[in-house]
Structures are given as C-alpha cells and as structure tokens.
Amino acid sequence: MSDKNKTYCLINYGCQMNESDTEHYAGQLQELGYAPNPDFHTADIIIVNTCCVRESAEKKIAGKIGELKAVKRANPDVVICVAGCMAQKDGEKLRKKHPQVDLLLGTAYVNDFKRLLLEFLAERKAAVYTDLTIHQSEFEGHMVRQSSFAAWIPIMYGCNNFCTYCIVPYVRGRERSRSIDNIVAEIEAAVKDGYKEFTLLGQNVNSYGKDFGDKDAFAKLLRRVDIIPGVERIHYMTSHPRDMSEEVIKAVAECEHICENFHLPFQAGSSEILRRMNRGYTKEKYLELVKLVRKYVPDATITTDIIVGFPGETEEDFEETLDVVRQVGFTSAYTFIYSKRSGTP
Image 1: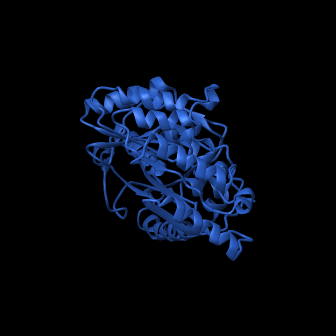
Image 2: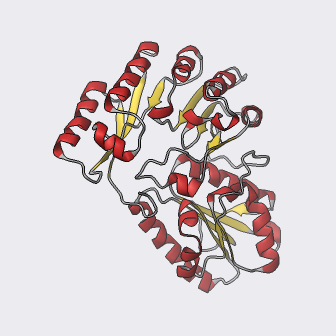
C-alpha cells in the first residue's frame, strides 16, 4: 500500500479541549498524507484521545483500548497511539497493561505529534512521552476542524488552582498562555476559511495571561477578538469563580459579539465544603459574583457545575447547595456524584 492511501482513525473522549487536541492530531496526520477513516478496524493509525476526569470515562476508555488488542493481532503493522489525560496520568503502567499500544502521548505533546510519529515509523520502537515540562503553547500548522462554521481556539493550557477533587493540574500541568498575537492569527485564518463562531478554550480562562504578569489579560483578549472582522459570535470556557473579574464581566457587557452566558461552576453551596474543596471562595462571595453579573448583564444566562456527595458532606451542607440553586435560578446545571480520583487529595 502506498503512503497516499494510508488512513487514520481518531477516537476522542472528554472535554472540548480534547476535541480541539483531536483536531490538531488530524491536521498533522493529513500533513503527512493520511486520510480519515471512521473504521478503526481498517485504519493504519489509531489514536485514542483519553479523559480521566471521572471514573466512568476511564472504564469506558479502558474497554476501547482493550478492543484494540484484536486489531493489532489481525494487523501487526497498525500504529496504536493512546493520548490525553489518562495517558498522562497512568503513563508506563497503562502501556504495560496494554502492550498493543505503540505510542503513549501525554498532554504536553499535542503539537509534537507529527515528529514523534515519524520517529516511531522509522524505528518501530514503542515509546512513552509524559514529561509535563515540555511546553509548546503556540500552534503553527494545519488543523482539521469538525465543524464548518464554529472553531475551538485554545488560549491556554493547564491549571494552577488545585481543587482537592480535581485531576486536571496533575495531567494538564501548570497554567501557560498562548500569546494574543498567535491566538488572533489563528482566528483571522479561520475567518478566511469561512468560520464565524469561536470558542476560546482553557481549563481556567479567567487566569489567561497571568503567566505574562497581566491580571486583566483575558478581558483584553475578549475585546481584541471582538473587533476581528468576520467574527460573529464568541464563547469561552471554562471559568473559575475565584478568578472571574469585574473587567471580564464588563467586556462581555460592552462587546458586540460575546455571548451573554456565564458558566460559573459553584460545585457546592456550603462554605465549609468549598474550603475543603480548595475553591477559594465562600457561598457569600459566589452570590456577590452573581449579583455583579446581573448588574452589568441583566439578561445573562448563568450555568453551573455541582458535585454532590463530596467526602464529609452533611444533609445541612447539601441544603446550602439547594439554597444557592434557588437564589441564582441557573439556566442549566451539570450535576455529578463525587468521583474519587487517585493522585488528588
């Protein structure tokens, strides 16, 4: 089979950042001449992009990786790559359990995938890459977007908040921001390709630019993206209430193209549970933030995340959560049973 007939299959799990990473993998594979193939049984390269935020996701992904053993047996030349957060968390342990995996890529290697794949194809030697100190935050290259009008735009990677239930800082690393120029160039190029709607992505977008020493960088970025000709709609996700600033709220109120939705995950209504979660705010502070949003953007939709059953949560603590729900009147809420994650407090 000639190279031009070779195909790849991408199997993605998890958040919008994972979806964006998958688009980066697809772009690099197409630069190498591979064509997409929805059937992993017949593809030459299979990438499973993984998530480990909740136990249910991990079990489903482990089952899919297990399925690939038979694919490898039928076609020893197929290249099986496991990438993303579960790869970062489990590393060599995951490859030992699943020897059919050829390449295991942690979250800091998305933009290096093409180089690492070529190295593997030259030597056919299995490899594990999970060093979080290697950061290439700027992206230069081709991307295969899943939508024809809406584009994911990663603006930063990692998280510094270390909520006690959350695996993200351990698998995505510390916060690092892309430059405004690099982000704007990507959006301008996408506008030329017909894209009109953009979602700015980060584990905690409110912290964008703090690693540059600019606490208002995210508000400035929103205003800069808003004036790019051809941009018609702007979303951003996800926010941390601890870092949401008045400047960001004002930017949403004053800019023409930013959707007036605030996703503010409060997680729990009890200030004591919030303290144990290391969320960095109290119930009262959260409700003050909601009032500030309502002051500047009266018609805003407010959505949230809630965790139920955090260790030590009492019936009284849960009533505090219900009280916040009643007071705010959220448009929608993502609700989860607490899921224990190894490696977190």
